[in-house]
Image 1 (cartoon, helix red, strand yellow):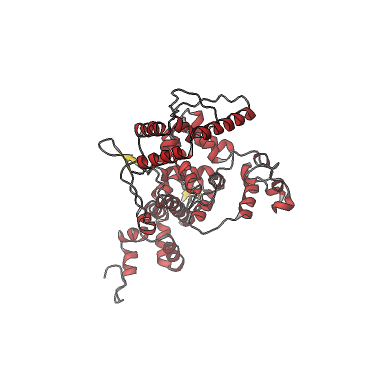
Image 2 (image 1 turned 90 degrees about the horizontal axis):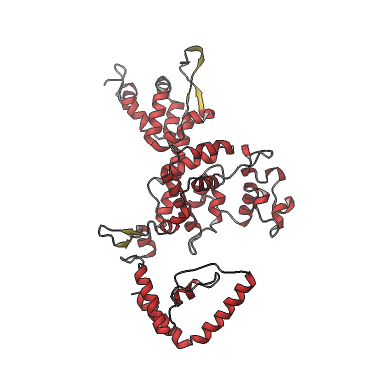
Length: 419
């Protein structure tokens, strides 16, 4: 009966409010929407919440969104702060109440953490795995997207305590996986350039809404987004003249390229996209992320077991249930197996492997493998000469290998790799 008025029936809600310890635990476990509702309709809850407002708001945000509450600190969002309802002074000045985070800040951090979780969850369900650290990295990138000046973004990205070398490498991994998601020939939503377009906006909300099918972008929507996002100098207005015509694209002139202008205003200075600035920061640090592109592609698909043997990562349950997909146990053949297979094909076809032969750029990779070539050198003097040489080589190969030999080669390749 503690916490209730004498003679009144027991009310568990009032008992929780008036308990010195359970009130805080009760408030922390409320959802952001329920917390706002109780704060608006219950007078006693309203008063007790105001009495301990800053402690409850901090703990509530840390309970529901620990990463986002730390990264999106309320100090960086003065528009989401309010004056202390208990009028506690600021810096020992009794006439000025201090600023404290509001419930709007709590709802913002909870929303942002859920958005980032959902983006990575959808990618994982499609088999595109990323490291656990991608959660934090994506939130820090969201914070960079919100910065309105190039100087502020540069200072933020150059701080190695905030953006470590590992963070930048993992961000490149996320970019590759996102391009693989959009560029999937069957399930993709568009070309790889779509990821750069969506990561140049003010937030990750549009990317989240597109992946969760909350919005659908057709050709006209993408065209409108292109004109608003990129400067005219970044667009191919020679081939696509309508991008520079206000009547054709339907976007008012003052909104052209507004996302690449400081302050997102028509008269602002040039603002480099946040995604490009992260890439440039990795180049300036000498990280050479291009050396890991193959590892980025294979990440989540192939891993080494305790014996050092490469194995394929099991497919997600969604693939096994909905699509009936079964991943082979062994991974992709290693370099020795591939080289041995190429030599066997050369023997069947009757083509001697040209060791160390220099192949001009433009020769298909399949033909280079058929020759047993593993070194490629750019020796092209002119584009026309390369095209003529490729055509001559095509005719020579067609004359050298008849239909029977091609069929035998295909059978050997099938027997080696499919088995």
